[in-house]
Amino acid sequence: MWCADELGAYLAWKMNEKVMSMKQNERSNVYQLISFLFEYPSQKMLKNMPEIKEEVGKLRNKNIKESLTTFIASMENSNLNDWRDQYIAYFDFGRSTNLYVTYSRLGEQRQRGIELLKLKEFYQASGYDVTDLELPDYLPLMIEFCSQVSAETSNQLFKKYKGEINSIRNSLAEKGGQFTPLFDALNFQMEEDGVLPESNKNGNEIEPISEK
Image 1 (cartoon, rainbow, N blue to C red):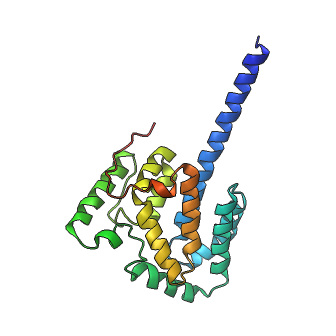
Image 2 (cartoon, one colour):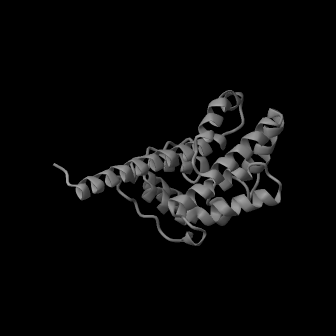
Image 3 (cartoon, rainbow, N blue to C red):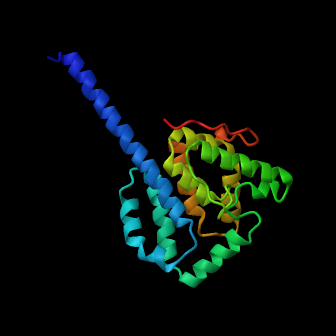
């Protein structure tokens, strides 16, 4: 038989376990949503928008929900071709706004190649298969990776590259880019996971964390 204190402790433990599971599922969903919305604008994306908006509506974090809702509304109110033109201008040709996180700091330097190799090894050590179709510092790929691993592992990655990610975001905001709310949503999720503005460790090594 359970005594009152034991039963209370057990129920509290079960409730905490349920809350932690819900938070893990939501953070995974948020990263998947952001990664998807960073893709090249397409008819497929527009076709899936009702489901995307439904998932966004379920989010508990008000700031993330508002940022994603703002971005989606901006996208739906734009002509698809105009949206594509903006995407190409900023993300394909913008030196300070492209989605390759290490590029603005290292450009084509040899050191960037070494850092890309370390990033790929970090992904692989965490059980994530990386193809050669995209460079490992491509932000949507980074975010997709973070949706598949624990907060501990994703935090280690984002603590190193948060500064570069925010540099892209700020350059985009200065140019009036409509993709800025996606970066804001990403920042809000990072902060919820414990990656605070002062947490950026630019230049430090990232060591593989074994997933449990």
